[in-house]
Length: 226
Image 1 (tube, rainbow, N blue to C red):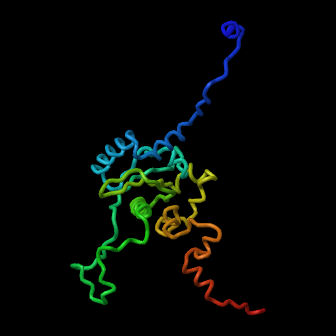
Image 2 (spheres, rainbow, N blue to C red):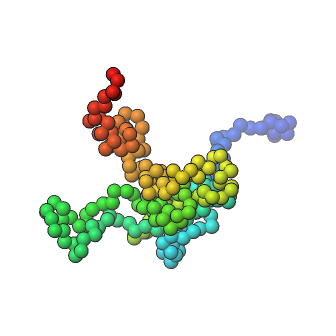
Image 3 (cartoon, rainbow, N blue to C red):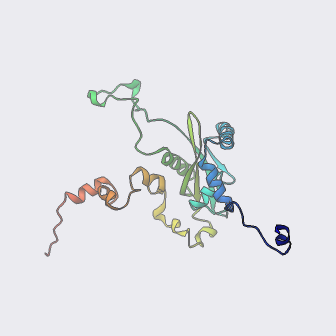
């Protein structure tokens, strides 16, 4: 009988598959992916109100998205700083007095112009200019409302002993990485330059840009001794 089988240690087979376990960071990642869920909509709405009351560029004690920050290189130790930056959404209106362009009709556009770089790269540049003694490592989106977009930027202190002695991050101490956010060397900057492609899709940007690729194709280089 079934009761006797259970008594001697028999375990009936499971009728359902075991539920896979999800780690903390994986849970947070899935939560942030579902931005239309009730929990995240409420959090983002409350945080957007709080961010509007603060300064445009504010240092925060810890990253809002811990999992995302650690994926982008953040470490919870001395030498790392997280700063939240707000940038105004929308295109870039041409800076002409009273909207008058003294030139050809094709150049008279004022309102429907777009900035070449993305807003995340602009936020990195604003933060890098204010904290000029730090190096911009990376950044990620945290919130937005009808007027502003909010990003958190990960900064590194190149003069801190904890950074200089860490072989995984002390590459950023090299002077060649000063203000890398202003030269399109961060992840957001490389995206605006079109450098996220690989393989045959990147034939038009070999050499760093489409201008460099064009120059290489249209210049004849002849060695002196050939």
